Structures are given as structure tokens and as C-alpha cells.
Length: 305
Image (cartoon, rainbow, N blue to C red; front, side, top):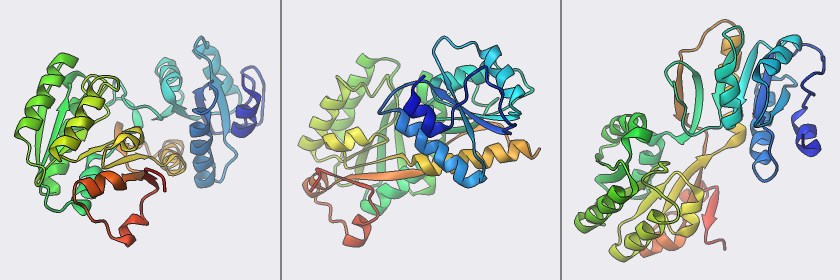
């Protein structure tokens, strides 16, 4: 257990008996820099609930039955489960403990559980794209159906709402994805098309696909937007990424609903608590002029001045 992390997250030892805490948070027992993410989420939860929320670090080899028993002894009725270890623990709990999921990009059985993923809402991505580049008419995306089927369904609806055509190209593996990108760039029109890099590990491989796509984007003047701030650092026009404090507030709203017997509708919703990263050099390359007022809404700008 990490003392600094536990001090920040008000941890309790797994076997300790404490005063009842109706809402608890479980999270992976990891070090920096990732622990800062969970600290910020917890701060948002506490600010919204006005409660001192207990944090329980979960090791990779944790005994989930013992963890649930400890939560019950300490008065825990609802658990906000963060990260992969949190999700694994939540899946092992029996139904006597209410669960809200957060801090993960994909969730198996997403229709059964409730929570918020780390994948930005396509509606927000497309709205920002239209705000920056009103002339864009088509969004091209290469995706793997085994990973991103549900996200693409949301994206189709969001595209229609924003007056965009979504060209969604299926690629079940890396080799197919490379061919899809090649053909997409060959037919793309940089004046009216943009390429979306989704959080899909099959079609957006960081070591092979991303460098290739960024190079083609620059050479062919086809703008790219993403859900990763790292892509903006490397040349994507913009990305939406999590606002951890506000995500904590949104998770707290769900948890309070469960605690109060409101039984929020099951399902994992996309992330709407987001920040914006923007690459001014890429904007200039694509002939994009962004007003000073809009620039002030960006949370991160690259390359850094």
C-alpha cells in the first residue's frame, strides 16, 4: 500500500473497522503518475457529496469477497469502482452492494452495470470539430467491431445531429486497419473531410498506425482529431480528454441516486466531463484560424509556448 496515495484518498486497511461510510471508492493500488487521476476523481466525489469518502486500494491479487465484507462492516452501501481492478472487484461482488463504474475505457456487460467510461462522447467531439472547421462534411473512422461497435452506434447518431456524414470502416485486425487508412487518405478531401482516431487498440496502434496516420495527415492536409492528448502532442488538431474532478462529480451523482433508491438506469455512458487539447502548429498547417476567444477555452495547447 502506498502511504502518500492512501493519505490523499483516506484509505482504510482492509481489515480495519471504521465509522460507517455509505459511499466508498475502490481503485487500483498503483503509483504515480496514475494515482493522481484517482485522487482528482475522489476530490470531485467528495465535493459533490459533501462527505468524507473512504478509498480502498485494490491489489492485483486482492480477495474480493474479503473486500466486500470489509465494505459492509464499515457501512458501505454503494461503491464507486475505478480502473480495471475496481471493475474486476465490482463484478465479483454480490448484489447487496450497489456499484457505479468509472475510470475504464471499455466495460464488458455494459448493459448490466451503470457508470461512466473514459471514452469522450462522440457528440462533443463532433461539436468541437464543427466549431473549429465548419466546412467539414465527412468524418472518417477506422474501427474494430469487437471493441468499438457500441461507440460507433453513438457516433452515427451524433454525426447526424451535427450535420456530418460518418464513414465508418471496419477493420478486425492491424493489417486490415493499415489498408483502410491507406484507402481513406487516397480518397479524402482535406477541405471537407476529417479523420477521427478513436480509443480503439486494434485500429489505433500507437507504435505502427499512429505515426503512419499522422504523417499522411500532414502530407495530404487532412486534419485528425482524437480522444488522446498524446496524439495532439504529436500533431493531431485537437482531442478531448477526461476532466477527472468533474468526472468525480458525475460519478457521485450516480452513486447518490443508487444510495437514495432512485436506481439510475443501467448502462455505461460516454464521458462528458472533458478538457480540450489543441495543436496550434497543426491548425496553421491546415489553414485554420482560431479566434482568441475560442483559444481561451482550450485547456492544453501544443507545442507549448
